[in-house]
Length: 420
Ligand SMILES: Cc1ncc(COP(=O)(O)O)c(C=O)c1O
Image (cartoon, rainbow, N blue to C red):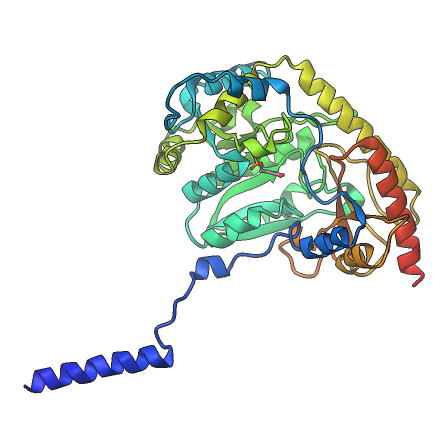
């Protein structure tokens, strides 16, 4: 009887708590830690501007406008299997063979089980970081870095030891000593994007050597994001960490067809490593998400069969665009920039206090004959708070004639904004 009465009271307390809202539905702390992407942050303003009839030139996103090669669509159209089955979790064999040959042409030899197909470079990054880092482990990285890395760092609770790089020195790496000073017992990996997003930097042999020395000395993984490998200009050369024979056990390459073949929507990328232990664990993640879309892999296989002159042409096109923006930016008073070396981005220091405010102003208060531009403030690409406030990233993945117009808008916009 006594027990029954107490149980009833307990039930009432639960009811009471329910009424008072003590049992709340709560989202995870993991997701609450996630920062907003600086590229997406200003979308509301650009949407409002287009809704109001403004024509915008999008210098804020890395979406190439070069046509996806027709072979991609043709291969998919010719697919004749009666059932669209799950593909192998490691990816289609034909695609892995195509990637293997592509790497062979670059003097890097990989076995098929050293190549795993994933849903874009993005899934590659997520799976690699999940496989390499525990909570509170640390990554050494140069800032500014590709801001989407933050979503993986934040959700996986990975700490960053960022070495600062500067517009004035073209965002090249600091000295070995400065980098080494950032390494702690918790450091698991050095991560880089080379050629770099957002900076357009291409690391020299000497800089690569600095990373190699540290990785060897402290037994660190090198997570080498090489999705822009083809896009290097002038005398610059993108050296792949895949060519470092003595680092075979450290190196993990992130790759993707998104930029190489203008196929961002296909969501096909790969993770490459000769480290068997790593490949074994990351493969478990691939198995748990079953497979990458079969048709997209069929299309990607056709892309890897293209002759290399396709890539030469794409590089030539981006090279022309890079020249346009560099020439135009060099003429703008107070603007600090160095000749972009690779990828299709440049980070530019503007003679203003707040790049974010300026970017919003361009969308809300400025136009030339009904046209304006969108840029990305770079602040969110740094992990150190309060730096990069006067910097914007310019993406030159749009047509040359549009870039010329966009640069005029930037030049005149800057003058008007500073004279307000
Ligand atoms: C440096 C870098 N890595 C990885 C990615 C992810 O590419 P995707 O997931 O489209 O393959 C991007 C996309 O912009 C990038 O700039």
